[in-house]
Image 1: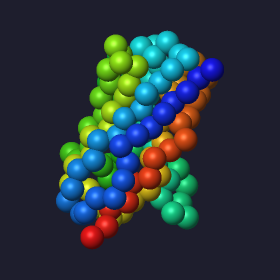
Image 2: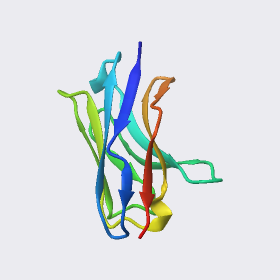
Image 3: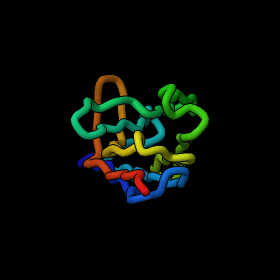
Image 4: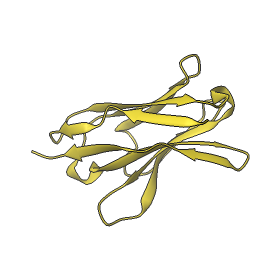
Length: 115
């Protein structure tokens, strides 16, 4: 059974930082491209960042220079370091694993940026 379990969300003030983690099980993690997506209230789910099995990264323009995606294949975990957070980053953040049309999602973790 495939599981993606996100953690690290919470309430943070503008300008603050959070680090999200996504622990994967039931897949050969190192083979999968991993990603973070987010859904803000009353909006569709959008790409935040991706990292391929080879380590190449891609970011949404809105987070470039503030967020960093990384992976630890030994720990079957992907991370999202979020710095200089803004109120518009408030959303539920979802972890995604994709390989050859096989697509898995975590349950999401809430990030709220507010003073």
